[in-house]
Image 1 (cartoon, rainbow, N blue to C red):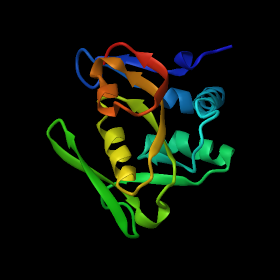
Image 2: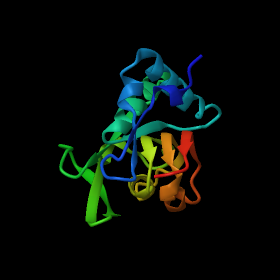
Image 3: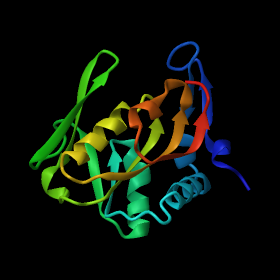
Image 4: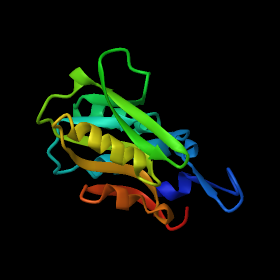
Length: 174
């Protein structure tokens, strides 16, 4: 039986020399790879009490939506600023050169809701940290974060200290 690692394509020197790009499109582009990824990520939620799954734009949608569907939970999209049409709540965060902002629809989150965050990758942890803060200010704690990949060399878990974080695959480099 294949493992998730078998479906990931590693592309050396992309987008610049010294970087190994971990391409997940070869996971989602294969029915067996996609099923394996969804099943393994969903298994990380066994025994976790939660009310909704939130997925970070855009690859968190790919994995979060089917998990929410399978578990009969609502899905909350976490989008880049300006992409949601109704009243939003936002959180800014630091980028390497500047800042960015993410938003959720205000009415999608009720105080006391327990949230699971889903994304494809933990790199620096900045976007996931911002999402956890965003739900926190809505009085909806993040009870678990599940990602397919982690690039340990970027130390993203440091930004997520105190949160329950699990990944399927962790690569030592960047």
